[in-house]
Length: 399
Ligand code: HEM
Image 1 (tube, rainbow, N blue to C red):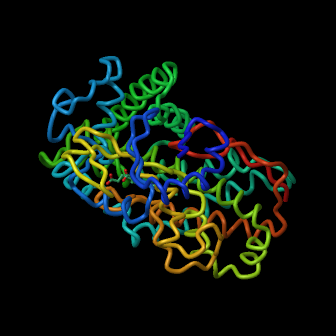
Image 2 (spheres, rainbow, N blue to C red):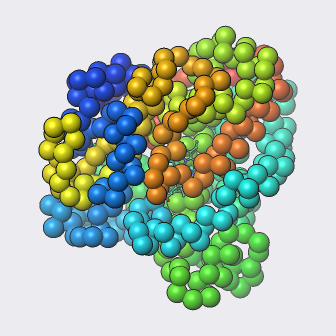
Image 3 (cartoon, helix red, strand yellow):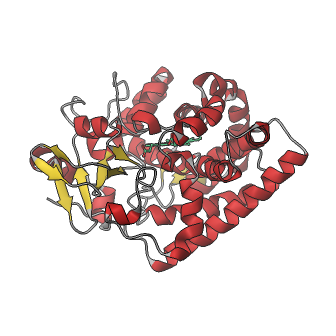
């Protein structure tokens, strides 16, 4: 079996190796990453919904008791920030804080933002009007989700440029075996970002607006349902999660369409395929290919004993190509229905921003297909050397 998350060939095209894993080693220990890899759809889906596994174990026990080294003391600003965001909380804290922010992300509320998201995208398109050739990443793919989530939270426009670099530095810590400089970048960015948000929350307390941060500050002031640390941790999470994957999904999606010219023609000829096409693109190239879970009590899967304290690597990207669930999984079918891909996860941590991410992708792909009827790829893109947050360095296109 080959699981080589640092190998550029594997990052770009892991699918044959995933096939092999699903067939012959659906549960296997990978020494290099110290992860137990789970590659079949049914297992990934079931484990995500099973409370015997956690995004963290600190709600039940200590590092020592779990047989895990505590992170070095200098990582503390990073972990304090991450552990105060809902993604790294477990119930009951997770339930309490998720409920507070969930209202801003319901499909209905998100749908009401559609005209505004459209207008933002139109504004960005003006920036590339007449350009002929441009890189999709800095012009359209990156700014759209950053501006949308920043406006929802109430981050002033003059500060939007700070968000992407902070996020990019923080997520470096999520990669498997991050380098020492990457760890330093993540810690520094955590300090800067949380300091910035604490200050912004204070300003909103003095002069509230109709944004999410003002709403959460009000919740803190009302009683004891949210702490300031949780506000900061969850807002940083929303700002980061609110764009990282959408940016990568946009580039991976267009790259996939360029590699399947017949499908691109099909979509151009029939724009009503857009909603199912977006789902299929999200399945076909998964921007977040692996999520981890801690094993809170020993368990057995396919005859393999997995000890308490082990870390699971749930291979979403492999699950999304499982032939037991998807007919001809390596075939890009823009009208695939049903399409129960796991790209947004499952269970209690199911992506809070899924309706928003979907809408942003529908608007950006739909508008570009219409506006640039002969958009072409200029040169083959390169993957960034990351596995956990998987994406392209850029995507040079010609109108
Ligand atoms: C294509 C875009 C996106 C993808 C592929 C994606 C994927 C995911 C996945 C897989 C999870 C679950 C992780 C786990 O179970 O360990 C998740 C959680 C989350 N996502 Fe997204 N996401 C996307 C866009 C967004 C957007 C636009 C937002 C904006 C708010 C967002 C906010 C969140 C939050 C807050 C969580 C944590 C939920 C919780 O722990 O309860 N995501 N996302």
